[in-house]
Amino acid sequence: MDLYRAHVLVCGGTGCSSSGSAQLIERFEEQLKEKGLEKEVKVIRTGCFGLCEAGPVVIVYPEGTFYSRVKVEDVDEIVSEHLLKGRKVQHLVYVDHKTHESSIQKSLKEIGFYKQQQRVALRNCGVIDPENIDEYIAFDGYRALAKALTEMTPEQVIKEILDSGLRGRGGAGFPTGKKWQFAAASKAEHKYFVCNADEGDPGAFMDRSLLEGDPHAIVEAMAIGGYAIGADEGWVYVRAEYPIAVQRLQRAIDQAHEYGLLGKNIFGTDFNFDIHIRLGAGAFVCGEETALMASIEGMRGEPRPKPPFPAVKGLFESPTNINNVETLGNVAQIILKGADWFRSIGTERSTGTKVFALGGKINNTGLVEIPMGTPLRTIIEDIGGGIPNGKKFKAVQTGGPSGGCIPASLLDIPVEYDTLTSVGAMMGSGGMIVLDEDNCMVDIARFFLDFTVDESCGKCTPCRIGTRRMLEILERIVNGKGEEGDIEKLENLAENIKATALCGLGQTAPNPVLSTIKFFRDEYEAHIKEKRCPAHHCQALLNYVITDKCKGCTACARACPVGAITGTVKEQHKIDIQKCIKCGTCMTKCKFGAIIKD
Image (cartoon, rainbow, N blue to C red; front, side, top):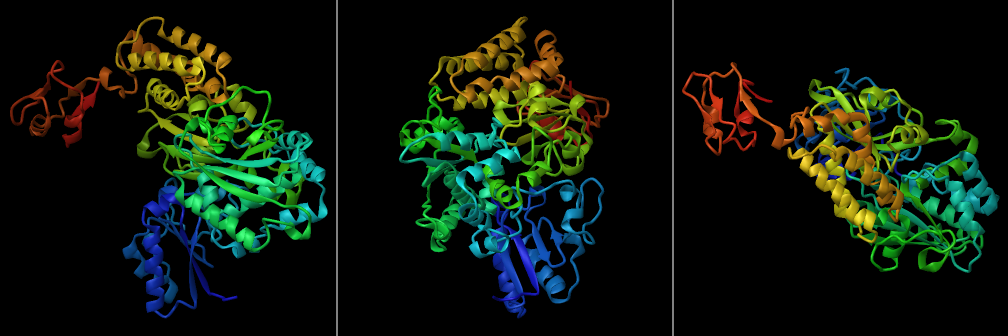
C-alpha cells in the first residue's frame, strides 16, 4: 500500500462537479507532478462534504484545512504554498457566514456548519473515495454484512432493526423493522428487496448525495435486508437524472461482485444475493411504492390500491420490501454498533438522525444531518447560518409537495416525526426550503400545488381533477381575481382530496395549501379582499412608485419597455400605473433606491 504525507480531498458530488471540481483534480495532478510531489500527495475525488454553498470544496489533510470556492487558477497557489512550503493559503480558507471567523485554525467539526451535526447515514460522504471498495472496507465496510451472515439469524437481524426504532426516512416514517418482519413472514419461493432512490421533491438531494458519496453502504444494507427477509434479488430504482449516482452505484455493485460480497455463497454461507439497477424517467409518482414496482416491471408508473401490501404481493407478484436510500444508510451501523447505540441518538419515538437538504433563503445551503429532536432554530440559525441580506425568517417548508410550512412562531419546535405532523407539516424525505419576508405564502402554496398537478399520474379523480381545481383558485388569487369564499372552497376541496385520493401522494398534496391557510390566513385575505400582496411578490398586485430619492437621472425612463415613466432631467419622475406592465426593469436600473414596490 502506498503511503502519502498529505491527502487532497476534492468534492465530487453533483454540485461541485457542475462547478468544475473535475478540472481542479486535473490541475492538482498536473501541478503535483510538476513539483515532484506525486508520490507524497494523493488527490482523491470524494462525495459531498455537505456545505454546497462553499463549493467547489477542497480539504487538505492531515491538517484538515477547508478551502472554499476554489477555482482552477487557485490550485497552483495551494500546491506551491501549502503542499510544498507548508503555508496555508489564508484568502481561500472558508469563512463562517455568521461569525465571520476564518476556519484556518479549526478542525472541520469546529466549523459552525458541522458543529451540531452528527453523521451516521453520511458518515463516509466526503471522507472516502466512493469508487474504491478498499477505502469503504477500511472504514468498517461490509463488516456488518459479515456479522449478520455468520453470527446472526434472519430473525435476530430483524429484531435488531426493530429494537433500534429506525423509521422510514422516505416520508411516511413507518418502522423499518416491522416492514422487514412482514416481508419475512410471507411464504414464497422468491422475494425481492428494493431500494427506492426516486428522489423527486423540489430542492431535495439527500439520496443522490448518499449514492454518490457512499454507494457501498447501500449495497451492503440491501444484502443485509435481503438476508433478513429471505430475498435473493434486489433492485435499485433510481432516476436517470442522477448520472453520477448511477455510475458509482453500478461500479460499487461490480466491485462487490469481484470481492465475492454479492453473488453466490456470500462469506462462505448459503446466502445468494444480487442487485440490479432500474432507471426511472423522472415521474414524481414513481416515488410511491406500488407505482415504483409497476415501473420496474415495465408498466406505466401508476399506484394501485392496498391491500395487498408489497410485503404480501409486490414486485412481479412476489413478496417485496421497499426502503429508501437514507433508511438503508443507517442499517450497517445499527448491525455493527447495536440497537441501543442507535436509540441513544434522537428522541424516544424518533430515534437516530435525519438528513435534510437545506435550501432557499439561507446562508449555508447544503446537506445536513442532525439528531432527531434538534430544534428547528438550531438548523436555521446555527447550522444554516441564518437568512442572507439581513432579511427576516418567515417560514420553512418541509416534506416537499407533500409537506407543510412552519412559521417563525414555531421556530423552537423539535424536528421529529410526531411534532412536525402535529403542526400540519411532515418530515417527508428531507427537503427543507427556507423562506424569508419577501416570499408570498399564497404563491408558495401555488408553486407546490402546480408541481403536484403536473406530476399527478391521473389515475384517480380526486388527485387528477381536485388538485387542478385548487390550483385554479390559487392562480386567481395571486392574479388579483380572488373572491370571497375562495379560502373555504380550498379547505373543502383539500379535505375531500385527503380523504379520497388513491395513494399517499394525492392524499398529502393539499398539505402546503392547508398549512399556509392555517398560519398565514391573513395573506390570503389581503390578496382577496384588499387586492394586495403583503410580501410585494405577486406581480399582478404590485405597483411601482418613484419616491423623492429620485435624482432625475432618466435611467428608469430609458429602460422602461412601454414608456410608462415620464419626467425631466434632475426632476422626480413618475410612473403611469395604467401603462406599467410591472416588469420591474425600472427598479433594477435605479442606482439610488428611489423606486419601491407598493
